[in-house]
Length: 337
Image (cartoon, rainbow, N blue to C red; front, side):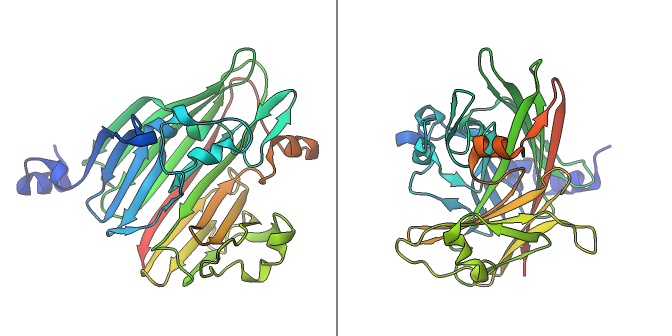
C-alpha cells in the first residue's frame, strides 16, 4: 500500500517532480565544463546543488529564494583543474555550502614522510562514483537520498574510502549527512576531517551572530586573538581585512545536544548544525570580514588548521586501523526565526 502522503501527491499530480525533485545535469561553461551536478528541490523552500564531481559536496544552497552559501571568486570548476601543490587548491576552492577537507590533510600545506600535502587535502576535489539517487515518498519522513563513494589512494600508500549519504527531507528544511570512512589498506592510516560549511551574503551580514553549545578553546593565531571579543558577532565588510579562525571543543548542553547556530536577523533565518562530540570533537569558526571575500565557516572537525605534519608532531592524529571504519553524522536545519 502507498503511504497517505504519496497518495495525496498522486491525487494532485501524476508527476511528483512537480513537488520535489533531484535531477542530474552538467555545467557547460568555462572551468565548470563537465562538472556533474544533482539539482535538488525539496518542495518546501530548500534548493541545493549536490556535486558528484566534487566529493558529493554541496555547492549552491538557498532557502525561500535567499542565498545561504558562500561562492568565492574562484567559482565552481571541474576537478581536472585542481592543483594539489601548496596553496594551489585555492584556485578551485568555490567552496559552496559544504566543502569536505581531508582525508589525509586538512588546513595548511605540509610535507610528511617525504609526501607533499596540499591545502585542505584532495578529497573535496575528487569525483564520486557509484552515485545513486532515491526519492522516498513512502518513508515516515519523506526524503530524497543521494549516496556515493569517493576514494583517496596511491600505489604503495594509503587507501581510504569515503561513503557518503545525504538525506534531504521534504516536509521540513533539514539535511542529514552520514559519512563512513574506511581504511582499505593492510596498515593503519592517519585521518584528518573538516566539514567546511560556509555561509554568505545575503544571509550573512553584520546583523548575523553565532550561538553554540561548544566550549571556546583558542584563536588560531595572534591576529585572531586580537578579535576574540568580537568572535560571536559578525562585522561589516572591510577592504583587506585578514581572516580569523576560532577553535571550540565540542560540548553537549543541558539537553544533551551539541550544536552551532548562525542567526541572520536581516533575513529572519537561521542555520543550525548538530553533531556528535564523540565523532567530531572540535569545531572551527572561520570568519572573513574582507570585502569581496565575505564569509563565515562553521566547521565540525577532528583537527586544527595547521596541517598533517604539525598534528603528527603533537601526537594528535586520529588513526584508523586496517580494514576498520569510522562514521560521522551531521544534521543541518534551516529555520525561520
